[in-house]
Image 1: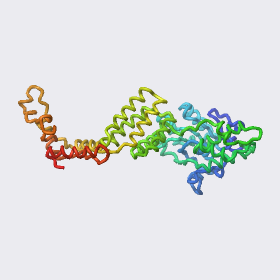
Image 2 (image 1 turned 180 degrees about the vertical axis):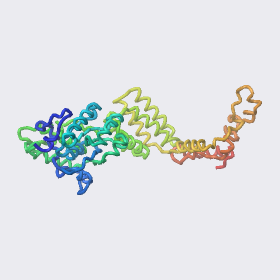
Image 3 (image 1 turned 135 degrees about the horizontal axis):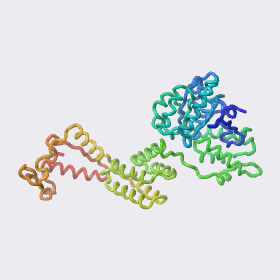
Image 4 (image 1 turned 90 degrees about the horizontal axis):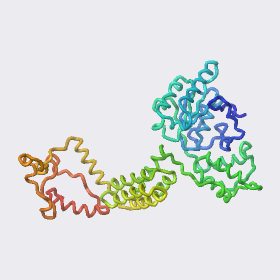
Length: 442
């Protein structure tokens, strides 16, 4: 048995063997020399290398990286020949964690080394569940290895993160995954040369799997099982066997925020093709279309504004339509709104104007409302002089009454300065005339 057969147990302490395990599990690297990618973690003297070996310190670790980049593999390597217990935060709870910790404490009392507790998707543990791990980590009753696809700064509690070594894994390159496929085809632990995979089929697997090594090996195993008597895997067989590619996207984590950020920035940057790409990623991943529509409404006001006032109308209509018709037809509505907004002239001057006005108010520059603008509809208002000198705009030439509207302390202030983009060009000319009529110069 290799170290994985010998060391791995489930939560009940029963050894787990790999004889009938999936190809991705059977091909898990047995040493750092078999690990592909992650060269930034594998250099001589790196923290990761210092964690592996008989004399390695019992240090808790948080592994952060995309799916299929080797987090579980590194956990096994760090565990070495120590007892290894694997839990998934999706199905396990505090009771399961405490059972492992108590068992480890008993083993330590009899002279054994502590247990390595690997928690996959640790970000799915609640704050209180993560807090329950702190005494065990603090007292080294277990060596914790947590794996997460989400930014630990947001998904792992600070006290636990501060007691652990954070290792960041990078997405694997296509060449790395191609090397894993070649190894799996020939290795006795894998397919042992029982099939031949042509280059076109490998490229197809790479396109579907993306940067996920586990997914690539799972696809390879599925395709190999469908190979004919000649054992040749062609691109045609691969295409006929494999399911459609799935987009790597966690709707509660980094991908959720990163993709919507890229989407908004692409629309703001007027790159309609990039915007549609990120929209497609969200649609395929099952993102809530109402969330996308809400962000488009915000963008229409913030980034397009008065350069094309119709943008907000289009965005709000899209939000209403998506709520009314739902998916999958809602994707068409979102695409139309995205195309319009990405193609529209841009201005953030309304957004900047309100923030500048808010800043003045918060700085105490509110001032008193001029008497001629105050409410004059209640008993006694006339006696106070409210509204007596107010000029009704519709009675003035051009519909603009030359009177002061701002508080005296803010007289002459300007918050909105239009651009020369789209409709704001004409609006700027009109505002110049209005401000001259109001006595505010150009």
